[in-house]
Image (cartoon, rainbow, N blue to C red):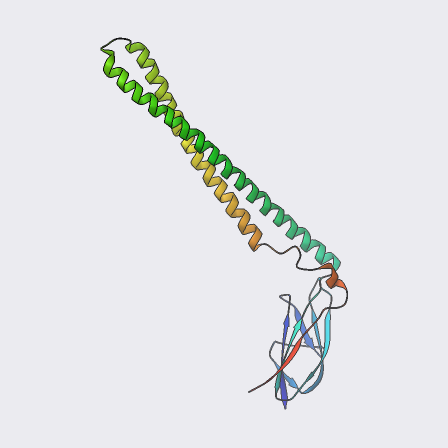
Length: 202
């Protein structure tokens, strides 16, 4: 009777051979001993001898270990991405703090404008045509302050949006990027590990 063998490699695009012949995941083989070999460029070859029982299904997981060169290149890329992620997130937080500071400063200026606006309204009502030149100058200065407040509001919005984008970019780079510690140095000792389980095949 035949047996079924499933081989899963920890790395994508790995080549699997059984007894020196290309093998596809889940194929059936004659019961008995077989040599399973898994290879991929940049990784140490993984090889195991497995005994297949008739009428049963066996699963193997091939843990491929990268070469020193592959590990170094991977960690370099992952570390660079993590650095960019931290830099973007840090810049986003800094801009967020700056946005809040500008908002508080501008809010206080708006309070000053409101006080002067109310004072000028009252002064115009009670001036009876006197000292209008002085009041007009105060009004012009208060109008300039309001224009400056509006400009600062725009800057605050732009700072907030930019800070949000940077923080979000940093988060995306961090959580979607490769893990710099994916390949522990200790894993380089030996040729990998595997587990095998047998289940009834119906």
